[in-house]
Image (tube, rainbow, N blue to C red; front, side):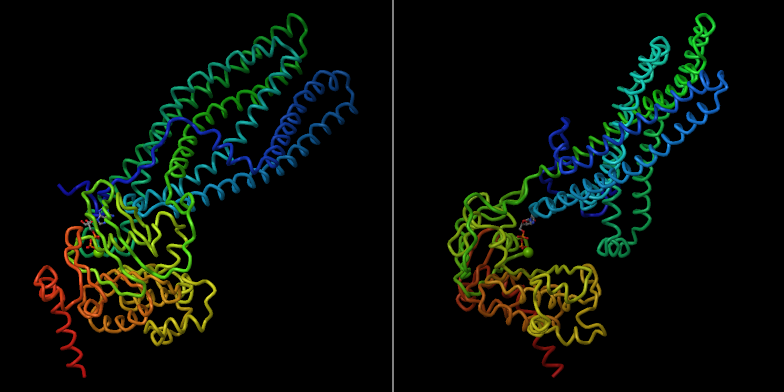
Length: 611
Ligand SMILES: Nc1ncnc2c1ncn2[C@@H]1O[C@H](COP(=O)(O)OP(=O)(O)O)[C@@H](O)[C@H]1O
Ligand SMILES: [Mg+2]
């Protein structure tokens, strides 16, 4: 069965999956709000002022009905109406200030969360990214953070506002007329009662919704990337992708509908209560008015209070509680990401690697990726400063893995990786990686100008330095041929360039970085022979005076190496120079016959033909 499997990028290795804890980390949430306490204190004052001002019209209305009109007092009437208008205006003005402060807090917290999330992700080890769908990561950084915004700017203010409204109103009502007040609040518990179950159900649905969104985001990301779309088109799988997307979309749709409906039933019952309350007040108040002369204005004021300042806020709070529960889930998801263990940038007691000479030593290194068999089985070698070491071996032998252990992209399970005699686990990552240049088959360029891509290695590089690096990498004429030269925008992965051009840009970029240690992992293997000749010259310039680990599949590089390590199934099975290894008649000589021989002869033949 193919269905359900999707594109072939499904993750095989499951790295540390961020676990969503059930307990809410209030301290952490509090820490997010802490920098904005001044604004929030002001907001609180605004809320209290606005809600106190909101009581004014009720009292004044009662005065109009019970005092001004019966006494035919025009001045009292004018003053009362003036007070109502003034309080409304004032409260509007305070509301504007409150809205502004709210945005400051909300947007500020969003920026903080987003930044710390992305910064944290940048510091996560490579295996996290090889094992997690990009879409899932993107969803956290964008959607989840956006959801936090709703909580911060909307929910929190709503809670405080409504609580203050309810408290001030209830206190005022009891002070004014406790019997009517009792009648007003008696049904409130009925409105709040169904909250628990509704909240729990909503929390569950929201959680599923978010997971579904992760999935949809992943599909979108994968299928709309240049590599993904190329794959779809070349296998003509558009119909399949349509079906897959439709299925995921339908499930999301159902979840969203469920979510809306849970809320509806609840709102409907609350709305029903809103009608019952005033009826009770009219009934009780009317009876008091008839039997013991309660003033009509008081009843009118109470009805307006309970409608505007009691049931409304209670209903809002009821809805909010549900939102909060699900918002907390978002916080949990974000905190789960923030809680993942990042790379060790500054190991305890670490030193910054002093002037790197470039010696690289592996001491009995055993390594496996999470949950796989051992990929390196006790690898030991030593490459002296300035030497060129070639690694050859069948595909899957562990060559790339060795290359990735030097800049400490991974840590070995046992054994040591040393640079200049320092265990890479005892130096700061910045100083280690600052002196290692890497060129692989897969070159990444930002969607930016040629110049900015080059300057990624050295932000303060002068134009002359860019030009020099480009010339050394054999790419300067090509760049000069663009109408916009170094200001030409290259595509995200450099799709507007050919493989060879991209590769030469990458080499120029490493030249600018000028590292002492160079790692070339099949840097030319995806290229055709003509391109390769050009790249080869660029690489020779690059390797000059640096310790180079070269994973090569072309003979010319291997033959020139100071030492060749032959790798098989995670072990170094032979080492030495070309001639000696060839003579041995072991794996190297077999590889020589099958892997290396042909390209050289073809390349030579080609060059011969063209000349
Ligand atoms: N990120 C990874 N997670 C798990 N296993 C991996 C990963 N990368 C490579 N491997 C496995 O490790 C072994 C060695 O891979 P690699 O070092 O890339 O070999 P080579 O570069 O010699 O072709 C292979 O069996 C490969 O499947
Ligand atoms: Mg490899």
